[in-house]
Image (cartoon, rainbow, N blue to C red; front, side, top):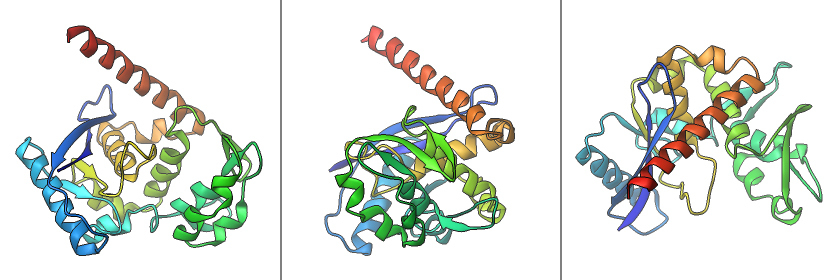
Length: 231
Protein backbone atom coordinates (compact mmCIF):
# COMPACT_ATOMS: atom_id res chain seq x y z
CA UNK A 1 0.00 0.00 0.00
CA UNK A 2 1.04 3.60 -0.56
CA UNK A 3 -0.22 7.05 0.40
CA UNK A 4 -0.40 10.02 -1.93
CA UNK A 5 -2.29 13.33 -1.84
CA UNK A 6 -5.27 14.19 -3.98
CA UNK A 7 -5.59 17.94 -4.48
CA UNK A 8 -9.16 19.23 -4.54
CA UNK A 9 -10.16 22.64 -5.87
CA UNK A 10 -12.19 24.52 -3.26
CA UNK A 11 -15.62 25.56 -4.49
CA UNK A 12 -15.76 28.62 -2.24
CA UNK A 13 -16.11 31.96 -4.06
CA UNK A 14 -15.05 33.83 -0.92
CA UNK A 15 -11.99 31.76 -0.05
CA UNK A 16 -10.63 29.87 -3.07
CA UNK A 17 -7.78 27.47 -2.50
CA UNK A 18 -6.90 23.79 -2.32
CA UNK A 19 -7.94 20.96 -0.01
CA UNK A 20 -5.38 18.17 0.31
CA UNK A 21 -6.74 14.66 0.95
CA UNK A 22 -4.10 12.06 1.82
CA UNK A 23 -5.25 8.82 0.22
CA UNK A 24 -4.14 5.23 0.73
CA UNK A 25 -4.17 2.91 -2.28
CA UNK A 26 -2.58 -0.23 -3.72
CA UNK A 27 0.86 0.51 -5.18
CA UNK A 28 2.11 -1.36 -8.23
CA UNK A 29 5.93 -1.38 -8.11
CA UNK A 30 8.01 -0.85 -11.22
CA UNK A 31 9.13 2.02 -13.43
CA UNK A 32 7.18 1.11 -16.56
CA UNK A 33 4.34 3.32 -17.74
CA UNK A 34 1.86 0.46 -17.43
CA UNK A 35 2.74 -0.07 -13.76
CA UNK A 36 2.45 3.66 -13.06
CA UNK A 37 -0.96 3.73 -14.70
CA UNK A 38 -2.13 0.81 -12.56
CA UNK A 39 -1.12 2.80 -9.47
CA UNK A 40 -2.92 5.87 -10.84
CA UNK A 41 -6.10 3.85 -11.38
CA UNK A 42 -5.89 2.49 -7.84
CA UNK A 43 -5.34 5.97 -6.40
CA UNK A 44 -8.31 7.37 -8.30
CA UNK A 45 -10.51 4.44 -7.27
CA UNK A 46 -9.68 5.19 -3.63
CA UNK A 47 -10.55 8.82 -4.25
CA UNK A 48 -13.92 7.85 -5.75
CA UNK A 49 -14.59 5.67 -2.70
CA UNK A 50 -14.14 8.83 -0.62
CA UNK A 51 -16.75 10.67 -2.68
CA UNK A 52 -14.47 12.46 -5.13
CA UNK A 53 -15.44 12.87 -8.77
CA UNK A 54 -13.73 13.98 -11.97
CA UNK A 55 -10.14 13.23 -10.91
CA UNK A 56 -7.36 14.08 -13.37
CA UNK A 57 -3.82 12.69 -13.27
CA UNK A 58 -1.34 15.36 -14.35
CA UNK A 59 1.93 13.76 -15.40
CA UNK A 60 3.64 12.17 -18.36
CA UNK A 61 2.11 8.87 -17.15
CA UNK A 62 -1.47 10.15 -17.32
CA UNK A 63 -3.99 8.07 -19.26
CA UNK A 64 -5.57 11.24 -20.67
CA UNK A 65 -4.04 13.47 -23.32
CA UNK A 66 -4.76 16.66 -21.40
CA UNK A 67 -3.09 15.22 -18.30
CA UNK A 68 0.11 14.63 -20.28
CA UNK A 69 -0.03 18.07 -21.88
CA UNK A 70 -0.39 19.71 -18.46
CA UNK A 71 2.77 18.10 -17.10
CA UNK A 72 5.29 20.80 -16.20
CA UNK A 73 7.70 18.96 -18.50
CA UNK A 74 5.36 19.69 -21.43
CA UNK A 75 3.39 22.81 -20.50
CA UNK A 76 4.95 25.91 -22.07
CA UNK A 77 5.16 29.48 -20.82
CA UNK A 78 5.84 32.42 -23.15
CA UNK A 79 7.72 35.52 -21.98
CA UNK A 80 6.75 39.09 -23.02
CA UNK A 81 9.51 38.88 -25.66
CA UNK A 82 7.84 35.79 -27.13
CA UNK A 83 10.41 33.31 -25.87
CA UNK A 84 8.88 29.95 -25.02
CA UNK A 85 10.09 27.46 -22.42
CA UNK A 86 8.66 24.54 -20.49
CA UNK A 87 7.49 25.34 -16.97
CA UNK A 88 10.05 22.85 -15.64
CA UNK A 89 13.00 24.42 -17.49
CA UNK A 90 11.89 27.92 -16.48
CA UNK A 91 11.62 26.83 -12.83
CA UNK A 92 14.99 25.09 -12.64
CA UNK A 93 16.84 27.83 -14.55
CA UNK A 94 15.62 30.50 -12.12
CA UNK A 95 17.06 29.02 -8.93
CA UNK A 96 19.57 31.24 -7.12
CA UNK A 97 21.88 29.55 -4.60
CA UNK A 98 24.46 30.93 -2.22
CA UNK A 99 27.17 29.40 -4.43
CA UNK A 100 25.77 30.04 -7.89
CA UNK A 101 22.82 30.62 -10.19
CA UNK A 102 20.59 31.38 -11.81
CA UNK A 103 21.73 28.95 -14.49
CA UNK A 104 19.86 30.51 -17.40
CA UNK A 105 21.40 28.10 -19.91
CA UNK A 106 18.95 25.53 -18.57
CA UNK A 107 16.17 27.40 -20.37
CA UNK A 108 17.47 25.86 -23.57
CA UNK A 109 17.71 22.32 -22.19
CA UNK A 110 14.96 19.74 -22.19
CA UNK A 111 12.85 19.59 -19.04
CA UNK A 112 14.52 16.37 -17.94
CA UNK A 113 18.03 17.74 -18.57
CA UNK A 114 17.23 20.92 -16.66
CA UNK A 115 15.86 19.07 -13.64
CA UNK A 116 18.84 16.71 -13.45
CA UNK A 117 21.58 19.31 -13.91
CA UNK A 118 24.23 18.56 -11.29
CA UNK A 119 24.77 22.24 -10.47
CA UNK A 120 21.37 22.36 -8.83
CA UNK A 121 22.63 19.96 -6.17
CA UNK A 122 26.13 21.37 -5.77
CA UNK A 123 25.48 25.10 -5.41
CA UNK A 124 24.52 25.28 -1.76
CA UNK A 125 21.36 26.60 -0.19
CA UNK A 126 18.50 27.94 -2.28
CA UNK A 127 18.13 31.69 -1.65
CA UNK A 128 15.46 32.84 -4.10
CA UNK A 129 14.33 32.66 -7.72
CA UNK A 130 15.18 35.14 -10.48
CA UNK A 131 13.10 34.99 -13.66
CA UNK A 132 14.08 37.50 -16.35
CA UNK A 133 15.02 40.13 -13.78
CA UNK A 134 12.09 39.59 -11.41
CA UNK A 135 12.99 38.13 -8.03
CA UNK A 136 10.72 35.72 -6.19
CA UNK A 137 10.99 34.75 -2.52
CA UNK A 138 11.22 31.11 -1.47
CA UNK A 139 8.45 31.76 1.06
CA UNK A 140 5.71 30.62 0.77
CA UNK A 141 7.48 27.56 -0.58
CA UNK A 142 5.31 27.09 -3.68
CA UNK A 143 5.12 30.78 -4.62
CA UNK A 144 7.31 30.85 -7.72
CA UNK A 145 6.35 27.43 -9.07
CA UNK A 146 2.64 28.21 -8.74
CA UNK A 147 3.16 31.61 -10.36
CA UNK A 148 4.86 30.02 -13.37
CA UNK A 149 2.35 27.21 -13.73
CA UNK A 150 -0.77 29.37 -13.40
CA UNK A 151 0.57 31.92 -15.89
CA UNK A 152 1.36 29.13 -18.34
CA UNK A 153 -2.22 27.89 -18.02
CA UNK A 154 -3.57 31.38 -18.64
CA UNK A 155 -1.61 31.42 -21.89
CA UNK A 156 -3.19 28.14 -23.00
CA UNK A 157 -6.97 28.69 -23.01
CA UNK A 158 -7.64 25.46 -24.95
CA UNK A 159 -6.09 23.51 -22.10
CA UNK A 160 -8.11 25.49 -19.58
CA UNK A 161 -11.35 24.54 -21.34
CA UNK A 162 -10.63 20.91 -20.52
CA UNK A 163 -9.00 21.46 -17.13
CA UNK A 164 -11.99 23.22 -15.54
CA UNK A 165 -14.14 20.12 -16.07
CA UNK A 166 -12.18 18.39 -13.31
CA UNK A 167 -12.49 18.87 -9.54
CA UNK A 168 -9.52 16.94 -8.16
CA UNK A 169 -5.97 16.28 -9.32
CA UNK A 170 -3.14 13.82 -8.75
CA UNK A 171 0.47 13.36 -9.77
CA UNK A 172 1.65 9.80 -9.21
CA UNK A 173 5.29 10.94 -9.15
CA UNK A 174 4.71 13.55 -6.44
CA UNK A 175 5.74 12.41 -2.96
CA UNK A 176 5.23 15.12 -0.31
CA UNK A 177 7.98 13.52 1.78
CA UNK A 178 10.49 14.31 -0.96
CA UNK A 179 9.04 17.27 -2.88
CA UNK A 180 7.44 20.65 -2.20
CA UNK A 181 6.18 21.92 -5.54
CA UNK A 182 3.61 19.97 -7.50
CA UNK A 183 1.74 20.45 -10.75
CA UNK A 184 -1.41 18.76 -9.42
CA UNK A 185 -1.62 21.27 -6.56
CA UNK A 186 -1.05 24.18 -8.96
CA UNK A 187 -3.78 22.90 -11.29
CA UNK A 188 -6.25 22.60 -8.41
CA UNK A 189 -5.42 26.14 -7.34
CA UNK A 190 -6.00 27.44 -10.86
CA UNK A 191 -9.40 25.73 -11.11
CA UNK A 192 -10.51 27.09 -7.74
CA UNK A 193 -9.46 30.64 -8.65
CA UNK A 194 -11.06 30.32 -12.08
CA UNK A 195 -14.44 29.23 -10.75
CA UNK A 196 -14.33 31.87 -7.99
CA UNK A 197 -13.91 34.62 -10.59
CA UNK A 198 -10.78 35.87 -8.82
CA UNK A 199 -8.12 34.46 -11.13
CA UNK A 200 -7.23 37.66 -12.99
CA UNK A 201 -7.30 39.78 -9.84
CA UNK A 202 -5.06 37.41 -7.88
CA UNK A 203 -2.68 36.91 -10.82
CA UNK A 204 -2.39 40.59 -11.72
CA UNK A 205 1.17 40.85 -10.39
CA UNK A 206 3.58 38.64 -8.43
CA UNK A 207 2.80 40.76 -5.35
CA UNK A 208 -0.97 40.27 -5.57
CA UNK A 209 -0.43 36.54 -5.98
CA UNK A 210 1.97 36.48 -3.04
CA UNK A 211 -0.59 38.25 -0.84
CA UNK A 212 -3.20 35.64 -1.79
CA UNK A 213 -0.84 32.74 -1.07
CA UNK A 214 0.16 34.18 2.29
CA UNK A 215 -3.51 34.41 3.28
CA UNK A 216 -4.03 30.84 2.05
CA UNK A 217 -1.15 29.54 4.17
CA UNK A 218 -2.44 31.48 7.18
CA UNK A 219 -5.83 29.81 6.77
CA UNK A 220 -4.15 26.39 6.62
CA UNK A 221 -2.19 27.09 9.79
CA UNK A 222 -5.35 28.23 11.58
CA UNK A 223 -7.26 25.12 10.47
CA UNK A 224 -4.43 22.86 11.61
CA UNK A 225 -4.30 24.61 14.99
CA UNK A 226 -8.06 24.13 15.48
CA UNK A 227 -7.87 20.46 14.50
CA UNK A 228 -4.94 19.89 16.87
CA UNK A 229 -6.80 21.47 19.77
CA UNK A 230 -9.69 19.09 19.20
CA UNK A 231 -7.58 15.93 19.33
